[in-house]
Image (cartoon, rainbow, N blue to C red; front, side):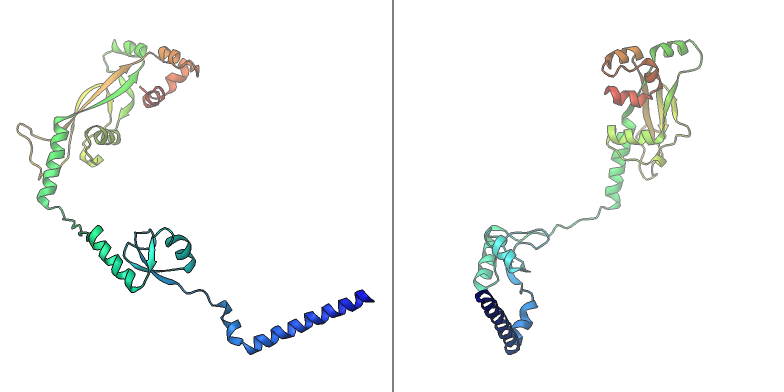
Length: 252
């Protein structure tokens, strides 16, 4: 009976507390209506530039917790009140002078012409060197014939454009090269250039040309196979590889 009486008393207390809470809600409706209102952001002045927030000296609105836990302990921002506004303004005048606006001056036609002329003279006075790997035995066998040795991978316009950018630091387009067919033999060549007529030709030159030299790199395949003894690459596998693949594989 004692346990039953204790349970009844506890139940009455719970019901009484529930009624009191309901009365409080009726007595203070504004208090419970404002429970869903979010916090108000604070206006602060940044002392340093922060990415995605603002520059130093600007006034921004941040959450109170972000200002209290991150910005204020690290002195990255101060409250937006009169004394801090004046202090930040004076400090920026002393330690950080006003940034001068950088004016971008557009290049004139004369400046562009001078740059083109300088690049064109570099193309004319330089010589582009490319190399191809060959099999010495096959090269000797073909050397006895009248026809020249043809490259397994001829030199194309795109390769010349890439080599000009790499060796001469001049950027040209494939349309600037007159190359009807790729270069498929060893030797020296003069590749005509198609440049604007406004660029004056150097003295003694009738037209623009690019000096290209393709030289052979003689490496015996069986010597390469001995060199790469870890992979035990066979002679037949090396024969099937292109020149560029052999070059990049052995880092020659």
